[in-house]
Length: 280
Length: 308
Image (cartoon, rainbow over all chains, first blue to last red; front, side, top):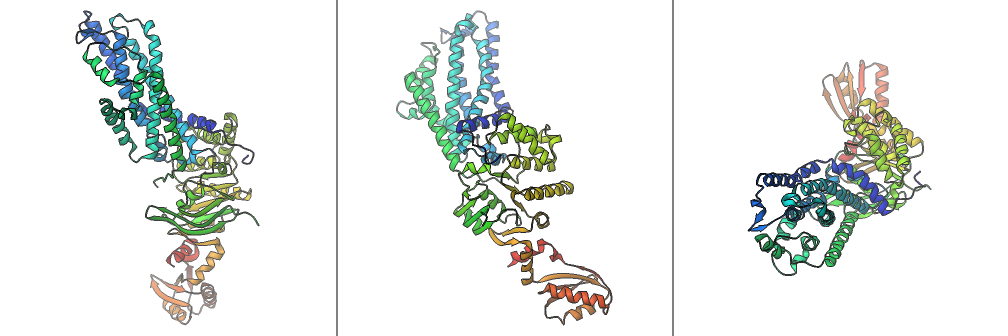
């Protein structure tokens, strides 16, 4: 058999690593923990829904005197909770550990002594990360949507196309953050700390100030993908205006594509050339 | 002339300031070769270099005539059973072996069939559908071997394959390795226990402190004993008389008494044993009850060699 076989293509190899990795990733302790984290927005949504039911007068539905509908609250939650917090957290925790987990578990040997390029292992695991995190985020967002949008009489049917766009935006966010942190994981020692500093130190800090530095963030390009209208003349809207010095949709999509492609390619190259010395 | 399965030229590997392997030049011929050395001798580093997990710091290494680092195509011809007891514990043995074999380009159905065949070869087919997490140590070692040989490689590299096995599993595994050798596979097998290797092959590489101390046939290596003191433990009725007689031999280097025995160090064991046999047969100095030598196994050879 050994002489007659040809190696699967790079993508074919990645697909096979994906098959091997997805189940492991889905049922890992990390997924259980992050699954619980994704329950937080659902709990918050449930609380808001209960409060809404209790205060039918709609008092709480005004922020700084401006009436806020369910769709707007949902949009705020998508941006502030999911895009700015949960997606980077998922990216950091999974992305930095794509190869590190296999090294720590000492199972990397089995993948690196097969007739496939090492970069295909990284790509396969990256695709497994995308599938795994999407599967984790999807139910959480769906539940929040169905709990929040009806508040204030909002129609689920009318808001549904926006939900699909939100899913696309979340998938792009997961892809971008995962790719960046995959690169961090393959290049840098203590990648988790560096990743957390990037996501929750560098990005929020740089976004607050005008200038070019914000172009070195993922969040800057993600802003253009947000489709929800924010409440006007409120503290929230002022805050959002500061955040949203926004590039065009086309520029954002192109930049995110470059970020994803470039960082995955660089991470793949790093894995090809790096020696992994397993602890005995 | 047959191509060596492994060839190293001035091969060195450093981990920062620590030397893993130091200027090794060797060729490993086809067949079964045992890599012997104590823990920390450099065996694992050598295994990682010949399986392309590490890149040489200096020198070169080829496996089956090709460089191994950054050459994934060569893994069609190589099967590797690593030392570490690491698995995807939630998978069954069959799922795990099949998933790994799929990376060799097999379809799902082919991979399942191939995995089944490999599990049968290591006598693990009955437990194929059990989770690896529920396997015994011996079964875990065998499932690791199954993934290494499933794709029918020309060269099997087995890193401490007998570690942690019970005596019966150990015997079975030794038998399997010898059968694979007879079937034409080349095998490099490492161990720090000398009699294990001796039971599989006569062709050994002795490694210590990152250097190859000796290579070749175990009997040739045994001959090296003659260059070093050889210890003989003799239990007899009259140990003092025996000792006095031994002092007349010029090859006897030292004597000491332990319990009811005399322990002799000789520089020429063959001559000493011949005279001792004559002495026992004559009965002049009473009965000799027991003659043993801690040097009769390879452990002693190894200890002699590492002391030099």
